[in-house]
Length: 219
Image (cartoon, rainbow, N blue to C red; front, side):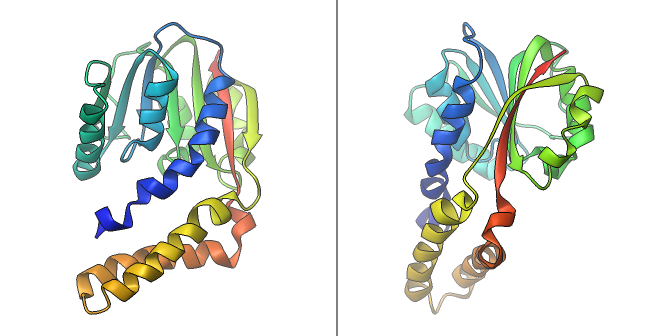
């Protein structure tokens, strides 16, 4: 069911914003990048294309990490891209391990203050933290950035209804097709209902889900 739904296909439309954020960073020679909460790795794979460095994607869901590992193998990137199961609340890499930490959609879930504080030690001196999250959750708390040892060097918002127009609306069309195909399959319908519920929440007030990329540097 999840293969037929193929959420990655719809998520890839946001790769252009990942690219825009990466291009706002200074040129780094073979950077070491940690992608926190990488999921099935749509941003992870984009970062691999954008940089000539080492990318480590971490998440707690082994099934989606296995999907990412298959992508890495298919693209011939096993020498510099890794998918590792890891608690996002207790990341055990040594201090000063990474040039860039990338976090799309994970900082609010984990807690803004806790994340900013915990991730700081993982960055090399003058390293960069790039966050993508909902404006209402993260950007309104940007005053916390300096408290935890960063400065904001750049930020940009996605269009007001980008999540609805570019992701959820096309996804809803696909879900309607699958409802017809699996109308007599209770397990499939359970999965589809879960995603339709999320769509309905966004549809009710699409502008409230506007998100922002924030590029920070470790002080």
